[in-house]
Amino acid sequence: MSLMLAEIAEQPTVLEKTIRLETGKLKKLGVFLRERPIDLIVLVARGSSDNAAFFGRYLLEITTGIPVSLSAPSVFTLYNARLKLNRALVIGVSQSGEGADINQVLESAKKSGAFTLGITNFADSTLAAIADETLLIHAGREKSVAATKTYTGQMLHFYLLASVLAETKLAYEKIPEFTNQVLKLKSQVEELVQRYVFMENCVVVGRGLNYGNSYELALKLMETCYVVAERFSSADFFHGPLAIVERRFPVILFAPQGVTQTSSLDLLNRLKELHADSFSITNDEKIAALSSRSLLLPEEIGEFLSPIPFIVPAQLFAALLAEAKGLDADAPRSLTKVTKTI
Image (tube, rainbow, N blue to C red; front, top):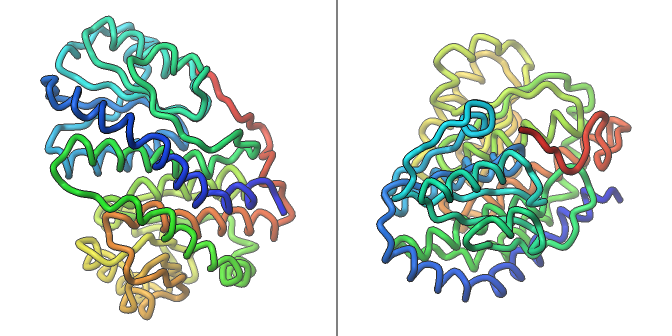
């Protein structure tokens, strides 16, 4: 078994441990932040951490009503801009805590008056030393280059943060068990990947809370399987990109029940007309029936809690597809675990 597959399997334990050990800190942090005037939240990250932040943007804006911006680190690191952030919460998201550009943005934000928060896997990292407060992912060392358990751990922290900033109650404590349930789909994924061994190009589609997952799966397919994978919102896909789809072209969808269901069904109907190959990760029987292939997840996973359980079979798909292609998912060519850019 690859390290990537082993670390995917660890996720229920990591999520449960993170909830257990970080909830107390989050409650105290929530009291402090609710008393502080915050007009803007800025998220800064790279790679898989940036995809987790993409999810965090949707969740925080929906639940708190505070505008959320995804930072462009080069604004700080290359152009030396000084932003007015005295009423902002700036959150750096980094598995290692050693991303030089992420850390430089946090330092600049502190000088501009922002309260800074770090989400990382390492308490002794540079990020943790810079940030005013640190939220830890209790994942242990992640040995595979491809991030899995730290990605979902970062997503979980956005649930925890949203729960203390907003009045909305999020039942995030159900997520570890949902994650454990979807891991049981591994044998189905093993069978499914045999159909995609020769896939060289594809599109990954998601919308709303699962839009960040479309970026993450596309990244995983590129870095572990060397598949050229584009990612789109199901809404944006109709505005031009649909033109690339032809007979048997693979389109992978994150398509949970909920408010995005209609757009998923509309896209699947169009893909069927084009004789494309549609593969849906869903818990909606209508969506599953309209797809060429599907993984059907438990119906009780509501849309707000779907992003973490829905990415897990996608992680399995990438890891098992790499294995079927004869590739080493743990050590992708040209990549290292920690990437330092300025």
